[in-house]
Amino acid sequence: MSTVYLNGEFLPKEGAQVSVEDRGFLLSDGVYEVTPAYGGEFFLLRQHFSRLRSGLDSLRIDYDPEELVEVHRKLIDKNGLTESEVAIVYLQITRGVAERTHYFPPAGTAPTVYAFAKKFQRPSMECWLEGFEAVTVPDRRWSRADIKSISLLPNVLAAQAAVDAGVDDALLVKNGIALEGAQNNLFAVKGGVLVTHPATQEILHGITRSVMIEIAHSLGISVQERPIQVEELETIDELFFSGTTTEVRPTVRLDSKPVGSGEVGPVSKAIYRAFRKEIGQPIDQDL
Ligand code: PDD
Image (cartoon, rainbow, N blue to C red; front, side, top):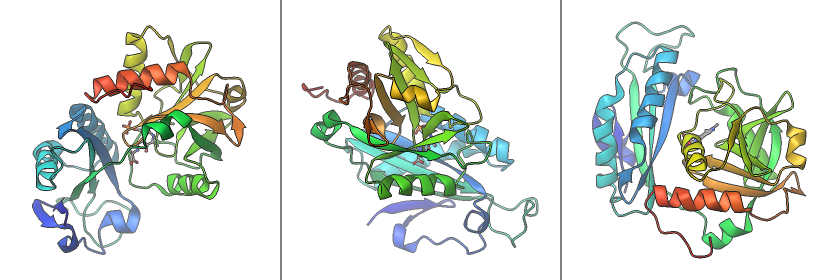
């Protein structure tokens, strides 16, 4: 049985309960974070916490998450994930429990803090080397996609559109620009240059995205942070998504048409190899 953290206590998941008046439940009034642990060691935990802090500040939720660093460690221990190849900790902070009003609850209302840890199963290397598929979906999110808000309805609908189409990812398109995935960032490769949308308010500033950019620099691959026109995707060489639960996922078909050669390309492979090295995990000889 898994152990979760709720408002200062570690509890069996089945025993953890949140009020029906929680503003997360009633209004999606909160933020979340997902942090990976490789072999029990957190990867870029500080960066995840810094994004969390900035989300809390933007939403004016008065809570210092520092004590949750230790909670993250304990969740990995208590759930027997110290040896796990990949695990994640999901953390959610809402504005707390109060009578429903659209405006903020009375000062002093305690935020609700909930976290759980679980094993993450990455696809097999054979599967990765075959590549993945995606569909384009209109981006119907609000204008602050940089805040990791728990209000994910447009992402949920986009992810389901991908499931309905029998593919792996949904690529969000707004005003003719391919922004990012429903749960990951987007990278295109054109003429050896890596292109990704700039870190504006229209996308989530993925922690994995920044690792991709650093890796590209270290491999001598030029990076352009600029909007990607959706029509450009017809002439690019490679496409991949990045994210905590995506890692690096090469897309070889988009809207049922091949991307580039229709096979996983050399830049995606080189970046994934370097990423595996960065997270301290073995690199498959086929990669
Ligand atoms: N999703 N873009 C969106 C819309 C996301 O939801 C995510 C993460 C990312 C990648 O961010 P990072 O590299 O920091 O994980 C980009 C998480 C994992 C989720 O919703 O479960």
